[in-house]
Length: 219
Image 1 (cartoon, rainbow, N blue to C red):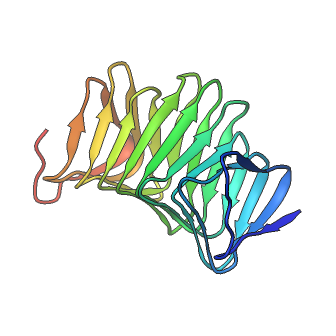
Image 2 (cartoon, helix red, strand yellow):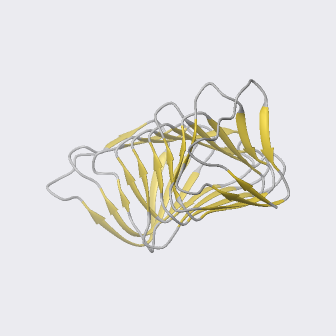
């Protein structure tokens, strides 16, 4: 069915609100899921529509299903956006782009997580993108990424497929723990004077690839 949230919607309490089954969420001119409120879960297959922005400053869990955001999404400072594949693959599509100023957690246990960024849109990260959970599934980001925060492959590996976009981390950090790999496949990757590569793992630029170092880069 269809659930309608809006600027006046308040989700209150210490429990959980779960949108289950085949579901349309209409946010109208915009909706903010506030901090210190219930956890909002997409347990079903949810399509988000509207003309405004979906803003999360609380906890939003996208669980083991294929959800589609046809609106702009901002995971703001203090917000936790969890792509959770505890029971099945979790494929999340952001056709209006995704801005992460908080924490974007790729929680892959036995199954895969994937974040797809729509054509012509960008995943803009000023916060932290981090692998959590286990190492059984793959963690994939597909699309254009601009990183001025941290992309942290601390538990599982990360694959960024940017043949149709590009990874610009000229002002950001790529952190890879020992035994882990962050792979960037195809397209253009941009390093610069502000790029930091940290950790004891491996960063691998694969496929037909252009590395743009701008005014210079020191490894």
